[in-house]
Length: 413
Image (cartoon, rainbow, N blue to C red):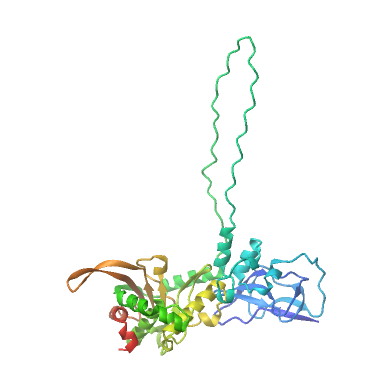
């Protein structure tokens, strides 16, 4: 008896997937829920597991194939016996049986012939992340080889009695290696990178995008955070970051200016009565935007926990479609990379995106005195078809007021 291994149902927004790699070969024994193959979509990487234990009798789709929902990938024979392999032939996958690995981590371990048991995982529940593997590889980089000793010149026999003219001394010229090497490498664009490129181009072509800027004095937020971060972490088991302040401030501003939380559908404007905020996250595969659904219902601790959880899942490659679905407004933080100022691009069909930047000490005037304050530049890119300049400017001013006087966020005033 044999059973079929099918492509899982893909969401309506995802037409197909690319088969990245098989982790089993035809004839291999598989256990129930063993990962058989990885599929890459526009947003995430899917693991297709074995529905039952048996022998992988036939593989019908191979690496690089484009597959759709319900398409047949392979067949598993139930009750069959696999060929006996030597006991010493233990694969990397077998060694890693007790350690859950994401597709990107599994590829790194396979390509570099590593033992995952020898790598310390920093992810959730000790899970290995791609960063853990890369750091392990850096530690294993061998030291530069010591150059071999120079050959010893042979001894010269005594000169004959008859005078002999000495040969001219000729300088030895070492030809340097060619310096005009111009290597190139052509690789296929990943599904995620291709989707990001498509959506960014769509945003520029289909929206009247403008950006307005402002600056915010972060002194009061920093003081409040420094005063309570220890107690906050002790109680909630999560660090108090700056992002939760920006999420709360953005929600207050979105409530005052509902057009910025809206989207355009044809000739209609859809005003969203909820606040699903996307938080842009940079991963080794590219930029993704997990969504804090009903962010207005979360307190500071809930926001920080969700952000930490999304970060771990993004690095491990375990984000789901539900994590990325929807979104009415997006926040991106280029400041973590040192960006001073930028113009973020819209995330369609959303009509606005807030850009955070690096906090820098700057000279500012307060009450007629020049003082040093931690300043951050803010940028709001918006679709001018739906949002007027007045609304965009006042939206940023509202965020500025909430952050410079955090009591607004705590007292809801």
